Image (tube, rainbow, N blue to C red):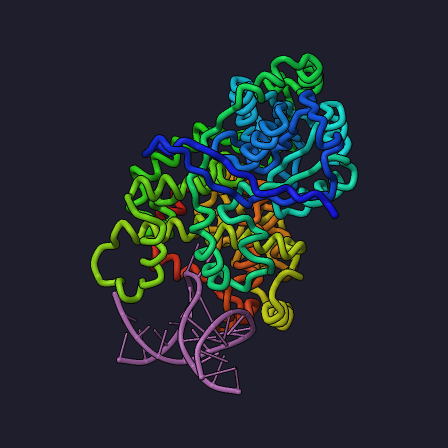
Length: 518
DNA sequence: ATCGGCTCGCGCAA
DNA sequence: TGCGCGAAGCCGAT
C-alpha cells in the first residue's frame, strides 16, 4: 500500500475576527507510492521539501507552495523552489521566454527575501529536464517533492518518469484550477453544461479564502543555517541577469520578438486585475465580444503562466462587487426569469466573467486531462470527425499554406488583421480567435492540416499559447469539441460556421482592420 | 430588429 | 424511451 498524504489543515488569521479559522484542502494527490525514506521517528531537518514550480509561477495564493510549506513545518525543515526553464518549450519563441525570465527574476528575488531559495535550472535542448531535476533533488537530499498540476502531455510524461525514479514522496497539487481537475470530473466532459453543475456543487467546498504566505521561523532557519543547501543553491542556479538566449526569430522580425505592452510577474498581474475590476468589469457582459472595445480582462497571459491565481480573481471580484458566489450562480441559473430589457446589471457582468474564468478554464483542463490527443483531430467527437471527413474534398475557393497564413497574406483583410494583432501583441482578441480558427479550417488543405496550422501559430505567437485553453479553443472551432452540430454547409459539414458578415453586424470591422493593418 | 429552423447527443425524467 | 437544451451562428423571412 502506498503512502497516503492526508488532508492537511491550515490555520490562518481571519481578517474579520481574531479567532483562527481552520479549513482543510484536498487539492493534492500522490504521483508515486513512496513513503518518506527516513524512519518515521527520525526527523532529518537538513532534508528540505522541494517545490518544483512548473505551471504556476507565483508565490502568493499558490496551494502547491502552501502545501510544501506545511509539510516542511511538520518536518521542521525548509523549502527550496526549483524552476526548470525549458528553452523553446512546445515551440515557444523568444517572446514567451522573455516573459518567463522577466517573471523569474522577480520570483527569485521575492522568494529569497522570505527565506526560500529559488533555483532556476536550464534545459537548453528540451530533453535534459528529467536528469537535471533528478540530480538537484538528489543533491539537495530532498525529504519530498511537491509540484503543481498541468494536463499537458509533456509535463505529465516528465512527472511520470520522475515518479518512477524518486524514492521519496512526490506530490502534485492543482493550484491552477479552483476545483482540482481530477476532482471536478473523472471523465471527459461533453460540453460546458455537463461540467457546470459539477463545479457549482463543489465550489462551496473549494472557493475558500486562501491562507497568507507565512514562513514558520523554523522553516526559514532550516535553510538559512544550512551551508550545504546554500552552496548547492549557489552552484546549481543559473544567473538570470546574465542569461542570454537567442531563439529562432519569428517570421516577422525585430518588432515582434519581444512583447512590451504587458509586464510579466505577479505584481503586474495583480495591478491588471485591479484595473480590470475598477475600469472594465462593467463593460464585460455586452462588450467583451467586440474586438474594438478594450472590454476583456487581459489576464490570460498571467493565468497561463500561473502568475495570478484564478481563485484570487474570483475572491477579489466578489469582494469588489459585494456579491456572494451563490448570488452570481443563482442569477445565472434563473437568467430567463431575470433577463428583462434594459441595461445589463453589474451581476450580469460578474456572471459572464466568472463563467469564463471558472467553467471555461476548467473545461479546457478537463479536455486535455482526459483527451491526451488534444492536439490531434482524433480528439474531435465522432459526429464531427464523420462530417469533416465527408466534406474533406469539397471544392475550396482559397487554399493557403502555413507561410501564407503566417504572413497574414490571405484575401481577407479581417483575417489578416487578427493574425497581425496576434503577431504584434502576443494576444488576439477572444472573439477573433474563433473567426480566425474557423477560417483556417475553410482555407486549408483539410481539417487535419488546419488544426496543425492553428496550433502552430497559436503556440508560436500567443503569450498564452501552449495552454489547454488554446487546444480546447482550436478543437472547438475546427472540431466541434464542446459544441453542437449546426446547419450543413460545404467544407464545415455540420461544424458551426462563422462568416465575415456576422462580424460586420457585430462590430466595426473596418476599424479593426485599420487598427492592425496599416 | 427579431424569429425560426437547422442539427447532434448527453443526461435526466419517466 | 422521450425530451430539453446547449459557449460565442447563419440565413432567409417577416
